[in-house]
Length: 229
Length: 240
Image 1 (cartoon, rainbow over the protein chains, first blue to last red):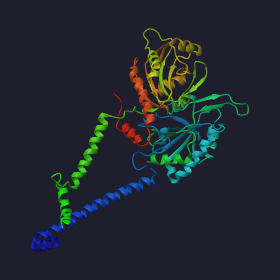
Image 2: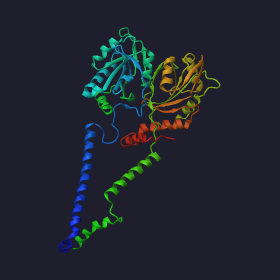
Image 3: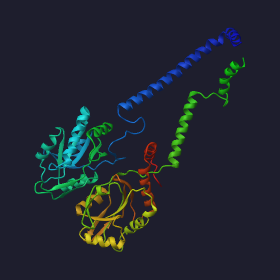
Image 4: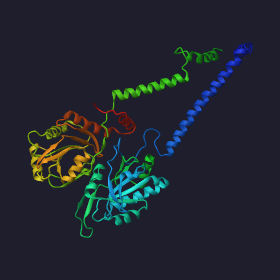
């Protein structure tokens, strides 16, 4: 019934069908293109997010403690291992990874420095935009030479810095870090208690991340990649 | 014969259900509209309220009323309310310890779900506020030693901590006579500063509510609620 009644109609009206099929075909084509484009974009988005190791939605999940809306740190100037005075402003455009320790430190500091070395290895070429600085909280014993020798044995790009008590307190306090000298055994000499966290400042000198002691170099490298310019 | 006819008629009927066939842009715009409305509702009704994560709290090394060393790391995992004062503070001096007394007394009515709440008074007059003086003050104020800690330390460290870290002004005019701005600071278990009360007598209800909000966020941040809390932070859903 339908076939019989339909075919005469389409044959009878010659002019209108000529226009109508063209419209539907091009409309469908556009719809298909739009859907294809959307699917392509979605797939691209998923691939990009996955390749970056990010979740599909929302901000990247960091391993370290994220500091929200961080104010710029006040600038500080310390003595670097080459004897030069260097300030935070000298490192604009680079991610600055700050660690506070001292070369006589028996266990915690070497362990963290090794993780920082792993972090640099993991970062590979991206490491050129990252500057690791170990700040010694023991200026009495850590001369620039000694500190320089200590940090470069982990990675040649690492810098050591130190300063007077007043200069050091200005940096440590705003990074949530304390340090205090206390008596050790005659074999070790005095020891220094200090917070063993690693602080990450972005290229504008804002405190962005704090890694607790024990964060692996791999996790730190992953987090730093999200912050790289 | 009826069946094919009925089937063929169906699509036409469904198109006319609302009197018009919604086109692709209409669907897109209505979806966008609903999303915008939903966001607007979330931001205005604020079903989730959070305290801003202002900045990282400062690090310090001080001594308590027993002469023992206390650092900021000792309070990791607890919600800490700080105030800054000196004990010889007389007549025209901002009295801030009363607020801590009231907060301490009302901690029972607060359910933090097992997260300890600590009160810390930091004295910026170490010359006169010796450990013995701090002990006497703690006894006079009825401080519970498990909750309320009194700290002091070397003058330059105190200046870096209170002036530098918490941005609270104080100055010794004459020996033993200080001028200072009253302030209370709330720091969460991760060491992040969550609230500042820069007034002599803040509303204890407000402080207790803020402590509750911090504790709630710690407990509720699981699964999908994580995203909701991130959104609340992003859209500044702060309590008023």
